[in-house]
Image (cartoon, rainbow, N blue to C red):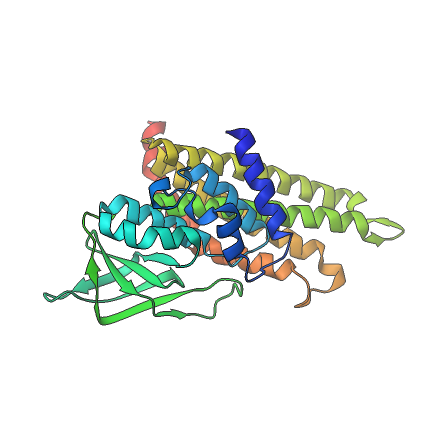
Length: 324
């Protein structure tokens, strides 16, 4: 398992080539590596792997701030597989796996369905996609795209608001599966990659930049700050990988571990990205430098699927009860 994931990581990293927020690679990632179908059974064109393998890809995409729709794809595949709708699986999953069709899930918001099956509602944080699965009252409804892509702090993302006003929707058989834990864990894996790469780039910079006749990385105050950032990243890795495995295993602790990973990774990526900007400050931050992109991605992802503070609130009852 370890060897297979290492090979997957190497393949994805090699294809991405360190290109920051590069467009046009999603088709190659799907065709050459099969990233979109990692968690999808082979009968639908996937690999039959687990969230553990998908997390490796998410981490690598996070390193280069990729706009690839992997986070939304992971959630969509989970929703389709958990719905129990064989027809929807057969229609949508092969195209999702090949990268020929993008599917996302709209679940953060509220909506209604009329007696004749028309769907209305407003949903936020919806990835741009050809087909959207809308969650209303525990059921899934398939609708065409039409997401209003918003101008956000993160210029690399294609997320937006889905507004539906009496749109025809096809109800999928079965109930919508739980999505919050999977969303938090997937995002944590991506944040881990972003934080780790931001730290690597910062370390490389302080080794190269000289001031007062020596590398600025030799200054003790910067060494202490980088050491703290390193410890943060390692703690984030532990939290993310533990939560991923808990979700894969269906552990009873998965909701708490997912919340802990979301808090830890959100706070880590914000702190490390802030240090990146601070330690690159001597060059004067410009639009041509990537430091501001890492900071924008860090602050945007920290608020996705609930702020760190909201997930601390999820953890508090369990922590208090264990202390009694």
